[in-house]
Image (tube, rainbow, N blue to C red; front, side, top):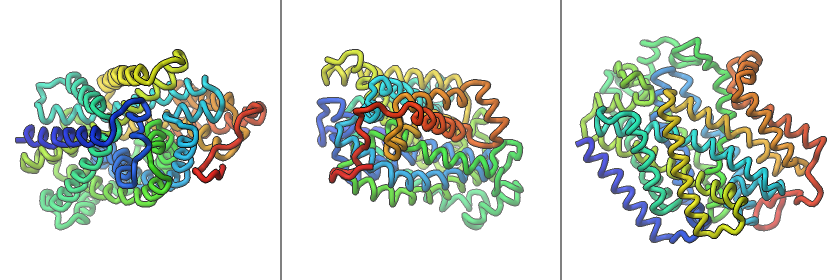
Length: 492
């Protein structure tokens, strides 16, 4: 029954999404395929934007983090609300620049604003690398679900390959509009499931109410409700929470797929309305953390000690098969939809900002083919990373935010300080990555910024270097000093 219900949810949603996407738009170019023709209205934009928040990172990752650490899972509450506040200011600016200059990718923005095609290529490669890490999250989660529904006879490697193939198949069929439809379905299903599970979980673990689940967890595991949580030597302190939340908030809109999401909106109002109401989604984390604590009280032991599988194992142990199948199917969509958008974005960037500069005469049809082929390569790399690692989804996610956050100075300064130059942005990237990924840099951060999120420290270093170089070598003469903020002609 579990497999049957899972297939019903997944295949039903995919068929509906593909039919909707094809009825709305026939993709004739990378822009049509990747941006939905820049016609995403408020409702569709809402679900697509929420789809990038409500992923396996949010549901499986945070519930597992609560089970393993306790209070550090509160990171989810902070980061979503902070991101929405920044998005209210930043996303309309990105949207206006994209519409005025016919930009399709994040790398287009950098190449156009800084008048440096080479910088666009560099940013494209950085963006693709960060997206691949984020795809790894979705493949890891989808692989867990496939093993639960198909049986442990399916090896982790085969599960990862099947997960990547499913994402590729979905995104090849239509594009962004199909993903928007599927995002709406999975968000509604997941919200209903989380509320239903939360409403019944107290009785499952012998508590009198949801609040009593929290109280019992605190009694059984003293200190679980306050930082640093269950593992006092983990470094997950108040400092870690604040710096991690700030890093996520600043880096969230810097991801290439979030740029393309901004470009896809039909109006500026659609973006601002979404930014106002998106923090409502953070309320669902109360229930997700509740389920993680309930799993801990119930003595749930995930397979191989994998904290990413805690919620799946808890529901499998304590609930009827039809509900397990419904959760598995919905969780598949949680991985499938964002993963497909991430791959679509990586393909768009590769075709437009890596291949096109090498072959300027590339046709739209050839560009579309190059985009789709490059997605296969990105998925293969993500599968390789999945097989080579065993980290929690939250840890993988923070790594992705740290990697892409080094582009944040180049984005924010584009709207705030016209003096910023392409060379300065590149210099900031070099400085940031030197701290973030090299052993000496990692050691320096660990010694001087105790319990800080490394990505935020590296972002700060990138900002300092970018400003310093811009003071010495400002933007070259002839470059446009400002970017448009809206169609009426206001500027930054």
